[in-house]
Image (cartoon, rainbow, N blue to C red; front, side, top):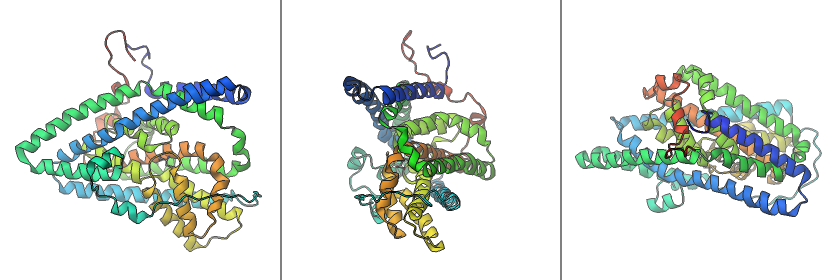
Length: 434
Ligand code: ASP
């Protein structure tokens, strides 16, 4: 047995997180003035460890998505299934995001996080949000190598789907190419397993540095906004997906949520759905039982276009800003917020902090001052972590629902609490277990 004593990956990550938080808080409280601690520990070792960890995850994303999606599509017996699955997936992604914003707006309207708040006027230079039409035009890569080099997820998906379809139509020669990609997929999945071994250390470094550099006092003036958003995010993660899984797929939500713990912790500490793709993919296929033919499509697509948590932040933030500036919103404006936040979440890149940029799009649509964003920037880093966990949970829930509906779901894997746990253990030569 390894020196992990059989401890699950999520338990090891949780320990890394807790120790990181503790050390970060101690640095923040007692050592902020000590030069060498800042230079060599906070901006030295911790910074480098965190960056290396995120880069190792990102390194896997493009090869993993490309290869597993080609495998997935080329293994489909019936290519008309692809269209149906695509429509169902996109439909559910849009629906869950719309529900998420509606909950967020309703709660913010009810609680009034910005009512009576008295903030000094702030200056804020808004960055231009990318026009949505560009997302549509840029779906097709002019140069697939370029798309891969730049990690343009939607373009990679389009290329891989077409490539996979072509394999199915290329007879015996196509079969050979398909075998190559199946083997390649195994190898890349092994790489994911290897990277998992450093996750607890990476998470430790990310959280320690965050806590060392973010004073929690910044939350106080925005406590109402902060805790309301956290509450609606938890509600969506725990209740909406539970109901959807139960009623649309007849799946036990508790089992689902238990198996999602590691993915949520990854998303939380990296604040990037994109960097979490490798872990989501492994969990959705090996722990939850979704066949690769579905997961290889739904997971990367979800990481790119499905951002329920981000949309919730935009809903609460918009109402909050309107309340601070004492601007009344009409019913039509509320509906506009829902629509724009859903569209904005499609255009939001799966990396930290981008939700705040696309928030400008929502504010402009309803005529609110974009400077309002400056009010919430101080607490956005921590909220980004929570909403990214919700984003990835939504991707996995929809993957399960679509797979169940298509008959591409393995109930034995889903019901087995230990299924896929092996992927969390790395096989190294004797005596060198990770
Ligand atoms: N960090 C989020 C994600 O990667 C996007 C955002 O809300 O800024 O899912």
